[in-house]
Length: 171
Length: 160
Image (cartoon, rainbow over all chains, first blue to last red; front, side):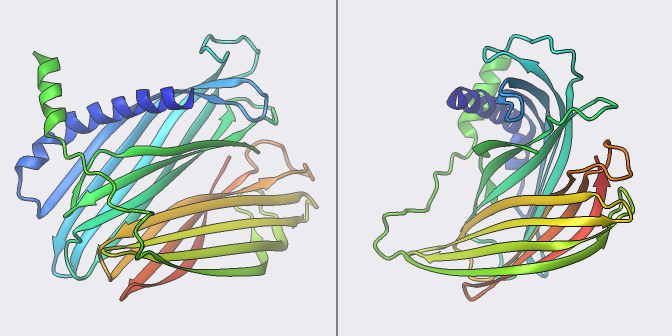
């Protein structure tokens, strides 16, 4: 299941990157800015209930590469927001009487190279999403979902990000 | 037509393969690990509790140099428990984070911005909702001539 999710999500990622970022490649790569939304739809195991959750939302990724008098700087900002509903392993909604999960998080990183554009730079970025039910009472089944993306920059230019891993942990 | 445009754009997208080679015979790895017990005393922005306790932290830094580039890996594993006053509620956190950077650059500074989660595990005198605190943490890695050093700063953030 994990590899299937990976393929589906990667495909969406590829399409989003291409549609949003292609025009930037025609420009001189002194300053490159990418801003695009990645649709997220994936089934994750629910580590608290033993069931599954269909997570639906959007990941907003912004990558900026800037050359200045202090060197070369790469900025990565990844934010996610969405919801989750109880489903079976096949994705069919399950009626539990419980409210849906909500999540929202962001992570950022700024890397500065005083000696100029590096020939090669690769990094991981992990988004820590906390899934908690939209309910006025405590349901004791909140959990975290950690999604790690791997980004590669060749001579300052980003290539297609890929998902490195997805893990869940009951709180 | 649109599909053809997307396909053409896909073909023009750079598909850079990972440059790191684990089998490079010139790979040399150095590992540094710091284990410490950290006493904490902070006011929860969610419950206004004064939370005191101790956390055990294991921080591991691994640097591998190869023929052309260097790989930096850090992992931080923290487990802690505390008690709040005046509610007498119990708090705990258990966090694991891991980062990897591979580059040809010998000098760079990386500032990572992420969140950590402080969980209130018993009720005390407050309600059960919106009492989990998220702490924003900035991890700064400075590499000079291939030698890394790491510092961490924390700021409080939001309640859930």
